Length: 251
Ligand code: DGL
Image (tube, rainbow, N blue to C red; front, side):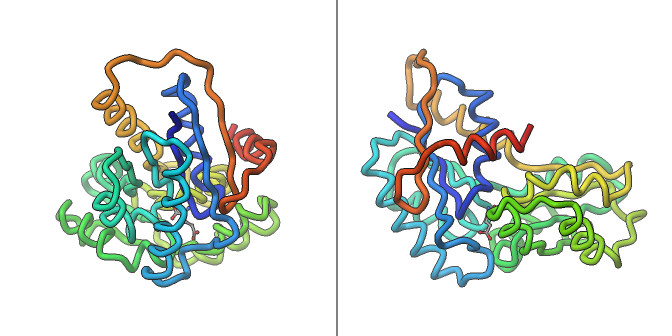
């Protein structure tokens, strides 16, 4: 049976990459809803409808678990998905907690999509951590479509980031949190525009550890097969070459 990874597009491939390392003996199905990307500028109702439709399709593909490898999708649809299906469903959570613990005297700056930062899920997390005064946030929505279009040129990305970050007083911060899976492709760009003493956090490893734990709960025996990956772009089965290209970009 397959483990399905879902994202509005190619961002979740960065989470799949962690899974290929941590859980190499599994079969994966990656669903990129690229025809409907970006999600981050859409209403929560619209995104929820797109995800429920995509997951209805995925359940017909023999899946045993689902990773919503999309912070935006998790924010708006994880509750509905868990209500509807009884297989393990793992979502993304911005890695704010470890970032706060990294330095107790400084603040954390979260980058995510416009929708994620508007949703209750994000603000409840910050409140739960009692960290309202220590967490700032900024949408970097345009990076999503840059990643979709394989547009990683420094001549485009660096001026965009410089412009977005021009008012940040970095002496107030210890870390940034990448709260959108598409942003993982831009690690090299972030490293060029943020000061060296700022640590970058993302939720990818945490999500895959969670997946590993859930699989242990449902499976008595570890499978021992070389992994296979299937790639779907909005319900159309697609050559894995493109997915492989993105995996390579992640190093
Ligand atoms: N990759 C997604 C996330 O983690 C969504 C990006 C988008 O489609 O706007 O939030």
